Structures are given as structure tokens and as C-alpha cells.
Image (cartoon, rainbow, N blue to C red; front, side, top):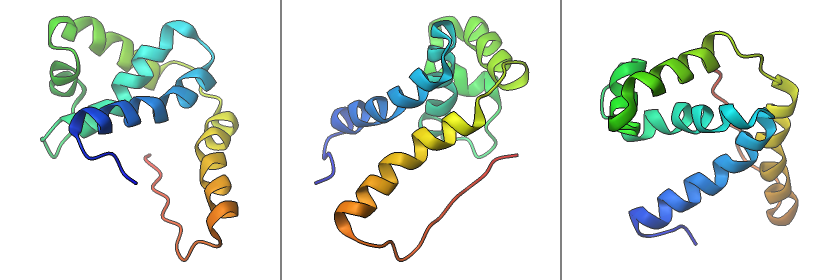
Length: 110
């Protein structure tokens, strides 16, 4: 059953992000990854520029959050294979429990 309250959905979202954050490997980049992945969900703007999104994610630390997220996106090395595995494995486990999926929808940002 899906969480019903926004607080429960927020906890579930953070719980779902934790394996991705751990897979990043660098402790100092976990919060940047969480901010980067959380931003589009909390920002009503259609165009998701980093500064206004970070103003919603962490209004007291916009400049620092912007720098850390920008570094994560522009300069940090990503372990693509690890990140894909961490995102894929729960879906495959669900599939084994519930049977074949009718449709896979994968969105790749470039």
C-alpha cells in the first residue's frame, strides 16, 4: 500500500534515495545527490534551473547548495554501472515477487 500522507511519502522518498546516495561512495556528496534528486519534486517550475530549485530544497543555504550540486553534476565522477544497478535491482526483485511487467518506462536525462 502506498503512503497516504505527505510526511510518509517524504520518508519513503528519502528511504528510496539512500541506496543511491550510498552508491555514490563519497560521504560529502550524499547530501548533494539528495538535493539534486529531490529538487524536481519540490519545485513547481517547469524549467528546473539549479538556483531556484535549491532555494526550495534548502532556502537557508542556497549558494552553498548550488555550488555542491553544480559540482556533483558538472565535475564529479559518476559510477554509472553502480547507480544503474542500485536503481534496477529493486525493480527486478519486485518483478520476481509479482510476475512480469507489462511495460518498462525508462527516462534518461542528457
